[in-house]
Amino acid sequence: PTIADFFVASPWSVIHTFVVASRNLGYSRGLQLRKEGI
Image 1 (cartoon, rainbow, N blue to C red):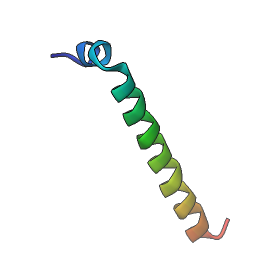
Image 2 (cartoon, rainbow, N blue to C red):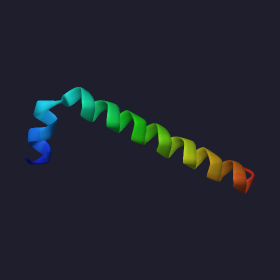
Image 3 (cartoon, rainbow, N blue to C red):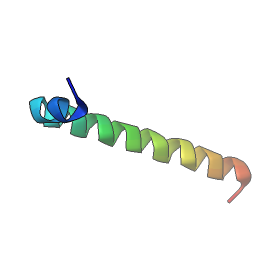
């Protein structure tokens, strides 16, 4: 199955994965900024 098939089959799963990934990315970015003292 392709990514498009997966998206059509379970869009909510894809949205949830994207939200969690972006949240983790923002969290790690915040830690990096805090470590640099900004």
